[in-house]
Image (cartoon, rainbow, N blue to C red; front, side, top):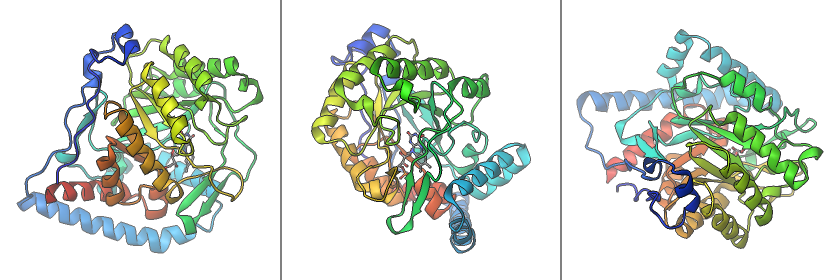
Length: 397
Ligand SMILES: Cc1cc2nc3c(=O)[nH]c(=O)nc-3n(C[C@H](O)[C@H](O)[C@H](O)COP(=O)(O)O)c2cc1C
């Protein structure tokens, strides 16, 4: 079976995107090309390569699950996250370790390539926001088979985050509970880090509101979002406005229609030709979601990330990722796809652990996928496994 039809983005002559017409964003931005196609059977060298990669992935999976994970899961999750970031920085620091990492984790196939919102992706799987908050792993992430990455969330001011502990594993739920509270170096320092850099894969920039009391008031919050947006807008391939951090001071203020309208109005006035995504909470009711979609349709918004963490639990502070958000995220993708009649790009995020999970989301209307928790529970070979699994699924026809 071939993948379902790609979203048909508005072409600039569409009736709904008045703001798009006003800012004369390029037509190509809305013409989503290259749907994943039905493939030809692999023969000879290609078949052998696929087999070798399958064997390699199985070996790494076994090592990860039987040796690395049992040790890592005994350590404090935040300490472990910091260690992994340190290893990632080291591996990314020179061409030799990058080549070695590619040898262990890379996978590519022409059937996976696609263009979404005018951006070309070598495959549809991205690293979700929150793993590389300060954009320090941008050299190593492309070596692990990711087709794109999203850094951040980045805020107007540097933010130390919430007091520790602020990260917990819930293996029984295949979830992680996150209460970081938007810890990051702030937009100025991160923009400086990224200035003039070339990236091997498209990089999205997630911006959020600084987690402090000063930004709780609506206008101050809008100004803070705008500061991060303006400072970061020249750095990546697309921008995400994180409306749904479950851990910010004062709750999730910008899903409220009045506040969202103000925020998007402000962002419309900041010139950029880059696509803009809104990251949504899985906990919104259908009525709330429909209001957000209606408001977004009047502004410069090209798509949605469905979804962030869920707060629907009674385990304590923070939001849950992984399987706890799986069904909520899938339901939201279906609703957004149906409600926007496939005209907006959807990035599926939440609970993707297998190629089957990924396929379900693509069938539901997503064009791209993001993950973190699956990689932590299953191992870093997961991205290659899912990509290969998607190719196999396409070839089945
Ligand atoms: C450790 C951690 C930190 C996160 N920080 C952010 C963040 O700063 N901004 C954001 O938009 N989402 C953040 N998220 C949410 C993820 O981007 C993603 O939406 C969520 O984890 C669901 O995907 P998953 O099930 O594949 O992990 C974070 C998630 C984790 C696990």
